[in-house]
Length: 377
Ligand code: MTE
Ligand code: MO
Image (tube, rainbow, N blue to C red; front, side):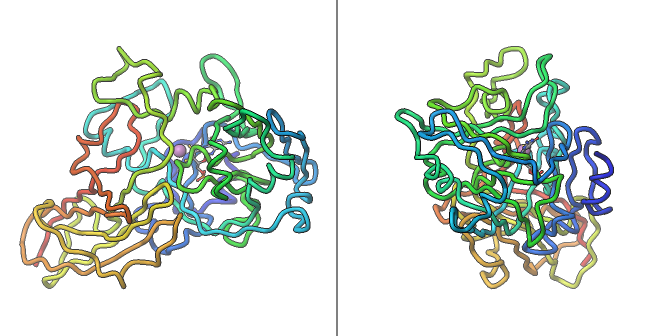
């Protein structure tokens, strides 16, 4: 699978783990463009990278759908069966900015593969595919009592002494709202192998973990799946929970990402030589179909804030991030703390510091982003 990494990913990628392969773009490149180039889109894998023959591939739709069906790629791409759908979507891993939580207090350690992500475990692409709702309709719709869709990826990984497929579920209501796509194209190119070729799910506004790669089966079910990725991995615990007392049922299943943002330039401990104004750049994103409405930047650790001018933010999209930049006045010589926070269109904003966000699973580091720089004025 290293050959696939070398072929499909940019040499600029930071390789966080070699197997399973996990990588993110370096700070300079995360927000260089509003649409992330495929070779720089982060990669989060639990296991290997399966190579699937497109012509032999099919998607099995079963469980509690009225007419279980098998569809080939040609079927999915047949516009007389399913209208083509195209959408700009941000995929964010719930582990984005985990490194800050690790630095604050190491949490869940060796038991699971928790990559020390920085701000790059988020990427935005234009996907082409079909709406999962149309596919379910093609199968006669959901049978009585069926409320969730279980998505199976063909990759395998080793957990709790078993070899298993990557399996999660999403509520049918999400598909019904046309917020789940089955995609085969990413930024005008065939979906790369490392991103799930030939077909992956894209679940808009949910954590990346629900966007199953190498998709081969979908089952309609009554309750959320009990598969470990769903029921054990992406859980948000309260701060009293640790290894000694954790019970799976105490964790909240993480679905929609809360509002968050990150400063991509300048970076921590950078010496910035300037003439009274520092250029600050970054991204902002909110899950669940909410979007960043305002981004604010502070040069005094969060005591007072400047709003990023709206014209310095990329356009609003229901399911995509906004990248932003601003020149911020700064007359201090010495160490200063730059902070960014975002307000989404529901006026949610970010917790103040990483200690407010800290949880044993080290997920959802959505606190305001703090960067210390040495300002030379
Ligand atoms: N799908 C499969 N089959 N196997 C995986 O390991 N990882 C998930 C999701 N889909 C994963 C998967 C996680 S945790 C994330 S954040 C996204 O894929 C990352 O998508 P990307 O690698 O295309 O950026
Ligand atoms: Mo993830």
